[in-house]
Structures are given as C-alpha cells and as structure tokens.
Length: 207
Image (tube, rainbow, N blue to C red; front, side, top):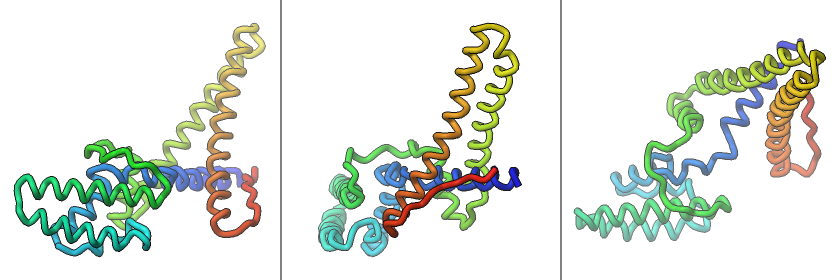
C-alpha cells in the first residue's frame, strides 16, 4: 500500500512539473510552438494555424497583420525577413498578453528547458511514457538522495553537537524538499479547481 501511494504521489508530481506553470516559458522562443506555427502559416499562406494562440478578441488583428505581412514578404530579401520577424514578434506579444504575461522579446533557438522540450516531443509522438519516466525518475532520485543524507546523518546525531546540527540540517532539507513537492502539487490542484468551482480541495497522501 505504501509503495502504491508513493508511486501515485510521484506520478502526480511528475504531471505538475511537466505542465506548468511554464506554459509561457518557451512560447517566446524562435524554436517554440508559436513561432513554428507562424512559420508554417507564412509558408502555406493560410493564417488559420496560428489563430489558436490568440484570444477570440485578438483574432481580427492577427488576420489583418498576416495579410499585410504576406504582401510585404512577397518582395523577398530583407523585406521578407523583416516582415516575418515583425509577425513573429507581434504574434508572441499578443499571445502573451492574452495570458496576462509580459512580452520581453523573442528568445534565440536552443534555449528551451529540456523538460519542456520533452513535453513537446511527447505530444508530437503521441506518447507520454518517456516524459513520465524522466520526471518520475528525477523526483524519485531527489527524494531518495535527501532521505539517505538525513538517514546517514541521523546515525551520528548523538555523537556530538556538531554531528547533531549536521543531522538537523539534513533533516530540514529532506522534509522541506518533500513538503515543497507536496505544496506545489496541492497549489496546482487548488488553482485548477478555482477555475472550475469555488469548492475546497484537500490533497492527502495515505501512508
């Protein structure tokens, strides 16, 4: 029962880490999904593929901008590059504004966090197995490491004051690590519930 509960907690935390709060963390990158869709739209000449990234009230602005950019980029050369860059920046800015996030400019390709890249790859491949395995393994490793450090320190906690303080430090770090994971997960659950209902949700982990 304990093993099952522990695995359930790890899996839940893995989903929290994967989703996040970092949804906007790579939407402003040149190799992020927003710009990739924008590039595809410009190649095809159809704006539909990027409209999902903006709110309904911003759709007309993007449509008008797209038409203007298509006209300018038809001149090729520097005009094309400038027009495309302007479209990428405008689309990302409007997308982030719709999320209530600030726009700080387009980020170079190659700087997306590994966990975000793996999250995108999971969707592209149609399987979340690799993502779950990586995140669960990472979380489990962290818990096991903090646990082992506290356990080892605890074996010498009564030897002398210095050893006792070393144990307390390791114990506090271990407990805070696990508590942080729990609080982060509970916070995500509550935040989701707040958008669905005004009811209270309490996260419990059975021993």
